[in-house]
Image (tube, rainbow, N blue to C red):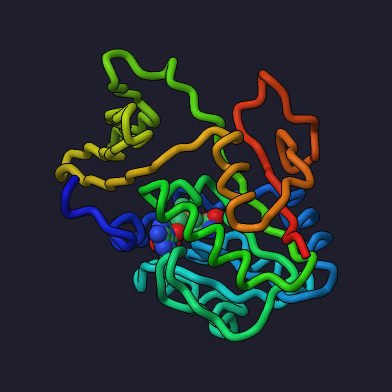
Length: 243
Ligand SMILES: C[S@@+](CC[C@H](N)C(=O)[O-])C[C@H]1O[C@@H](n2cnc3c(N)ncnc32)[C@H](O)[C@@H]1O
């Protein structure tokens, strides 16, 4: 997809995002509130506020970064949504006055930066915005290339009386990139919701963090802090700013 940029995902999906992804794990909010230690938090990819709003309700002051005006427009009318400052920028180039006790990026959104260089610059940028000892939390899937046959997948993700949802994906092994469409077929027509990700294994993520002066403190398999291991399909990685 040559016309895909940092705001494409959000601009295309904003109208239906909350109906697909309203649920969140309450333990995610517990962990983030604890790691913020009462200090301000920065969310990369705040979107419609699925995580930021309940975190704010716990008394944590949240600042968001996002590239998509349509996603942030969905945040604003929600209770507390108008009070959250949001910087409209990409993860590798945002600049905010002030230092944060906690930065986080949930729901695989770190992978929405599409080159290794951008991902390293994102880590470096986050590190610049952390107070000494501040933490960066990343929630991401562990890549599973067995899902792909001949570098592609087609999966039915929903069947309703009036609609079928299908995910079509292509894998670029050299770039570590998965280019997908969420396709919704209805009697009235077809809707396409594109999403492109550059996946990294936890080991590459740790190297990127080290380049940025961040050290791995914890890696959990879920928000309940279960131990991470060979069977884990996702990870919650907590990096701490050195010095
Ligand atoms: C999957 S949504 C997650 C929203 C919210 N954090 C949640 O958990 O529901 C990803 C968000 O990140 C934003 N985003 C994706 N890539 C971005 C980038 N490179 N720079 C800034 N924002 C980006 C999108 O616009 C979208 O709002």
